[in-house]
Image (cartoon, rainbow, N blue to C red; front, side, top):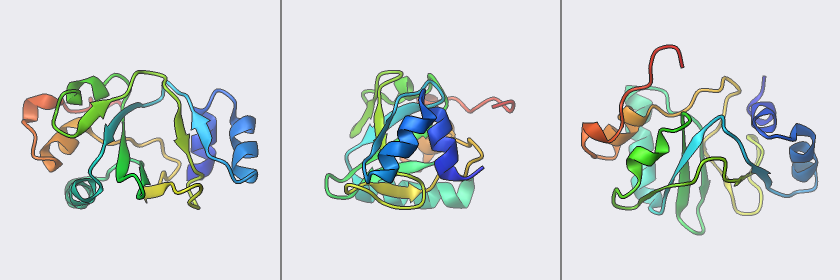
Amino acid sequence: MTGTEWLARCSPSPEAARQQWSAGELAPIRTTVWSVVEMNDLLRAVDALLVLRRTGRPGPVPACPESKRVWWLLPPGRAAAFDGCPGLTARPANRALPCPPADEPLCGRGWLEKPDGSGRLTDPARLATALGLPAATAVPIPAQL
């Protein structure tokens, strides 16, 4: 499965997501498949992403360079541990995240790390370490996820 197909399937209406992308629009993906941590520091996010690439495979990371925002996609329920950390905000569960398709930027948004279709998400403990946060911020993902 491609990254774009995976994104569409995360949406309650995959066909609506595909239609929006075909029309050159972002698709608001509202899902329980992931939780979201928003970061307003693009340079810090890129540095963390480089660490994650060396120490483990990061999950998909959508970004808006103009606003210097990125969104870390974590396993469900794991974003809350990051709320209150400097520069990070846990987004409410099931809140829509406007996403471009995996293979092309749209409306000023793209992917620092593209979804590959596997469903892999960023490990919260590795993200905490990559951001220089205390290890207690996030616990590791159990092996079955």
